[in-house]
Image (cartoon, rainbow, N blue to C red; front, side):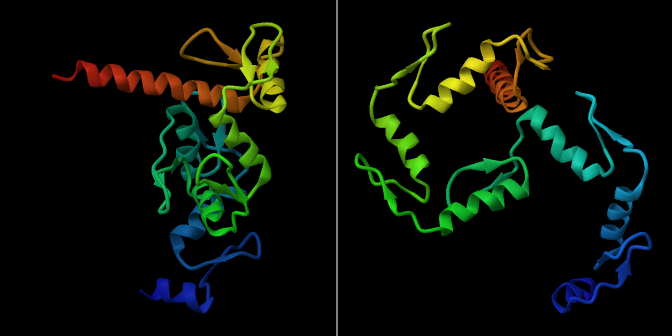
Length: 189
């Protein structure tokens, strides 16, 4: 209770001896102290990344599993970490002046509205010259075309595919995880 009270009063009783930060709990100070260590003792078992804090490793592992334990209190979206959730929840609080001409949805960003309105039409004017896939926005086409390029430093460890962007690899890994869950559900009696 005393530690909780210090949060509200601003009195932080556990100062770091290596920098000017202070903390309300000894456990927070201990976690912070790991940031001052030379090495990064917490290693991901699925890639070559290392972390100086176990909680950062746990959050990182979610990029491999696709786990999203944080649910938005305003809608049904789930997020892999609290920061992403908080950032998302802000969209529910901002004014939404951009209204869709086809449905009741509104947006706080004009680009989001334009992207959304594409779901109401089959018009996808931006076509890939290499595979004939079509896209609603030119930026989507440009991102897609990069997948055809030779520079793909992000390989999937579950199949033979490689990707030019880490985000694309992570989205692809989620497909493997969803497929695995679907197979497991089918196998259950």
